[in-house]
Length: 606
Ligand code: GCB
Image (cartoon, rainbow, N blue to C red; front, side):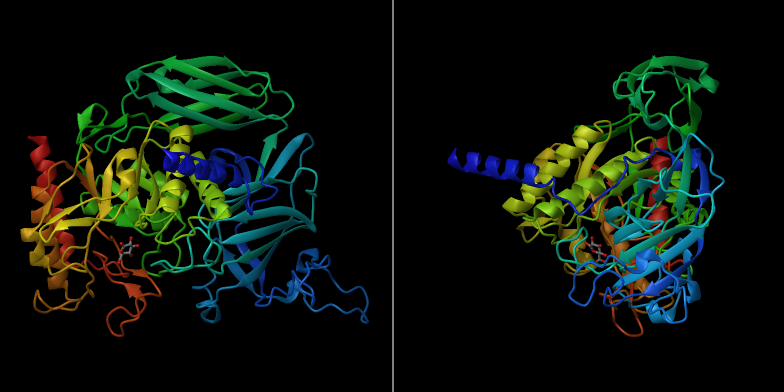
């Protein structure tokens, strides 16, 4: 009992302390920026490399009041000024800096960015600058005033600039620091490339004084004829009539927002359900007295029932693949609709109905393309391997990234799983940390499943299980396993059995082997396409024997850059577990997995 109380006190301590975070000045996130009046701030931004953070600290290492963010110009030839944005080179935004200039390929440090722009400013409107993602820590300055700070490289954030925005000559300056840090999320040790910079679009959003800041529409988990949701206004006129209109379903629901600007609602209708076979989306119009926003939303239900995964009331097997947010052909961070079309198109070709977007929230184009093409999604935050479990700021940061991920994508029908972590070693502090995140997901969005990629444990030489105490608290039993690659050779699969005490759907969130595309040889020779092919054959046979297997997302669709992978002539800085090379040439294993997925699909059709 004493032990339980002690643990509980620790938990509470975490909870309260976790309010400490590096974020500063952020405005509550605006929902659906694609549906707003925006001025894109993408394009060529001036940049300055600042290895010593000289534009931020003075020679006594104290923050400067005349830092680079003041964007000064000399007024007379005798003036002393040691920087000048006007004469600098440019970087493309969005885009990581590493793949834009050879000199920046290995750079981990600070870079200052500047974008000048004019605004066709209207009276009585409000303005926000919105960043899709910037890796990793960003200090934002607008017209020489500091707006604030955001930590985390894969989620959106915004600041209000209504009072500062000018009709001409606005100067938006960012200090972006991509140094890895042990207390960061992710921590300093990962198996992917640490691309730095403004990796997603930057937008200036114009909204009326009172605007529709947020909304959520979701099918009732136990009633397919009921849509639940809320609308949240922001501004001084909080009490308004708001219409939620779905023209195709002849729905026009009128709500009245309360003194806090919020209206919760339920509306009866019978939408055609979104599914991989028929990814139906409806045009939704939300209209207040002062604002209107439109979206495309689908409706479906998802639940775990015993060992079954149930989509829209029917059992489904998730034929998946893991994907990193890495650009096809050119490497670097993927960000565009064109990148998403290629990656999602390949997953479709593999005959997937599911993708694991690893190991951090991907750009919105990926999620939306997957939704249009009928792919279910597992979305996750970069709580990966050995992060600082006992650091309150680390927990606050992870919680914030989780909230930002859920906020952005809560209206996407294809997301069925929020995942809170990947391959984290069991310990008391880690359990407390992750338990807080599980609790958060349930608070923020109880309509989806909560998972994490767990590790496996051996019962005996031929039996494996999950020995993670958190397995009881998650909705699915998902784990990474590398039998045949890090764990024995592929024929080990033939002898192995799996046993689970929890009655939950089983997901293999990773399985795979490295192979250099075009390298051929014996099935026992590592790095050949034949070795990888053989490993897939043995693993698939083993997976066919696993009771309650409800989904798989092998590792991984495409080769991706990782500094942990130096082997010359084979890896050359790439993790080669892709089913296609970084140039998108298919390896033999691609077809093995594709055949299995075809087989599963035709069995399900019978
Ligand atoms: C894992 C990690 C993944 C790695 C992969 C590998 O378990 O979750 O991020 O890239 O193994 O290739 O070793």
